[in-house]
Image (cartoon, rainbow, N blue to C red; front, top):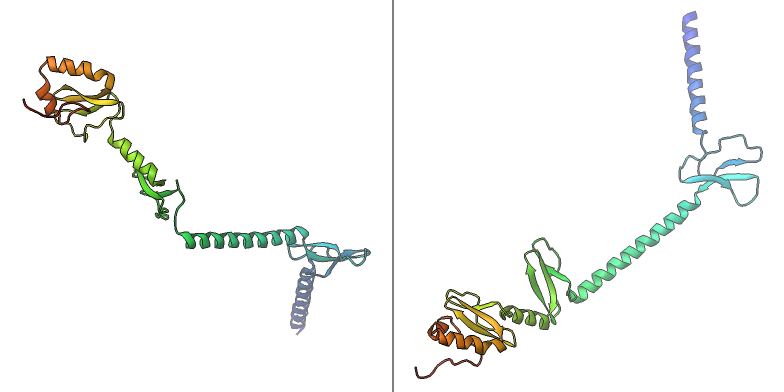
Amino acid sequence: MKFAYVALALSTATAELHQRFKKDAEQSCITNQSQCGGQNWQGATWCCDPNQECKSNGKDQWTKVCTPKTNQNNNQGQNNNQGQNNNNNQGQNNQNQGQTGRLDTWAQCGGNSYRGNTACYDRDVCKVWNKDYAQCVPKSQARKDAEDASVNRVWQQCGGKSWSGGDCACEPGNSCIFVNEWYSQCQPNANQNNNQGQNNNNNQGQNNNNSGCATWNSQCGGQN
């Protein structure tokens, strides 16, 4: 009987001690808008919420309470404004894209790894530069590039047997001059007469026809 009484007393004391520790733990930090400091304050001085701080309540100099941190409020306001600005900008971009659906001049419009819009404005054309890049360029520029690509530069080959480079056009101021049956070359017009005379002396006229083209202002037919 004596042992049962002792066991009951120990159990009761343990429960009371546990409740006291629990109460002390709950009171070890201060909740929102509760007093955490001030004159003659003997309790805890730190706030349970890490986003709050213990500071004057703004009503008197004797009382401090747990209130949201000033920086936290400012940052929250800034984040809200930033989010609103981002949403506005995104909406504006989507609106502009929806209105036009076209890419500006010089913008990328294609390529192997490109996944964006491919539509240029009517004034432009999507020109392929290589397998990885295409660009919106003005149609006038695209035509000029195409013409330049079809014209042979000075001193470049422009004809000959087995020549597969297209027609015999040379850039202005030059003519496609026969050199031998395998090779014709774009040369300045000033050299044309000298080379033509040499070719005639070497009886290369027939070979000139074999080159596949006649030079600018050169004979291209007639008796014999």
